[in-house]
Image (cartoon, rainbow, N blue to C red):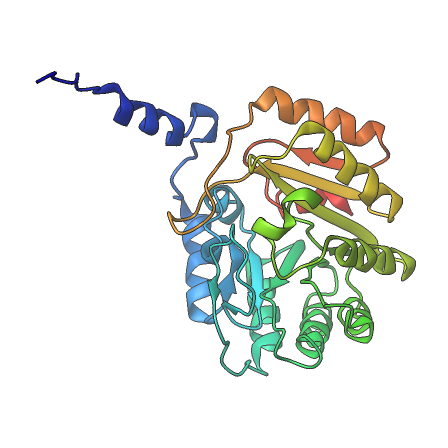
Length: 294
């Protein structure tokens, strides 16, 4: 009988593939400002994408007294393969949420607020009225606060889009999330051309427009350049690029950890192709340094 050799290196190879490189290490959230934000979020029973999305910058942003508020609950009707937000049938939305969000922003002394939401495809208006009332209420209580709204795909409900973006916010963001070739696997309920049209219509309404993608999902550089060109052609002003990080083993795997030098190259490439601002580094998320994009 021939004895086959035992190959002990295979587990270590697998571990090496999944191990995060040093440039993705982040500091633990600590400090008085962090605790203040945490207390207000808990006290007002608010949802933040910082928590629901497992954002790696939560410690830095909360430590600086800022947070990205998530309205319309914390259960999404979509099931994107990259996203840590819970998916399912959401409960009834809270009509008092606009007031609570606005009061928390006032108490935090936020100069630039970022507001996002889950998808609410089961609602006829996609949640547009709550979006509108939230921005209006923030402006009433904190008139000096500037606002970026990171809005979901409205599924070509253009009346809902207009209601979402007409409340006085300065920046409207809608993330493409990935290159066109990966949409079926990464963002199956969305449509690439439809999201581009949403950005184009937002620009036509007169808003500063913004979008972002993740890399490390298996895209090529040429595909990244193509989405840059498509976004610029559809009126996008601000572009963000960050490393995809797998939230759980149930989500799509990381195909590659992109080196910081490549992110620097993407930034220069994006600026040369016509974006007004480009945020590009491994830990960048769509609301990172949002106050710079006014």
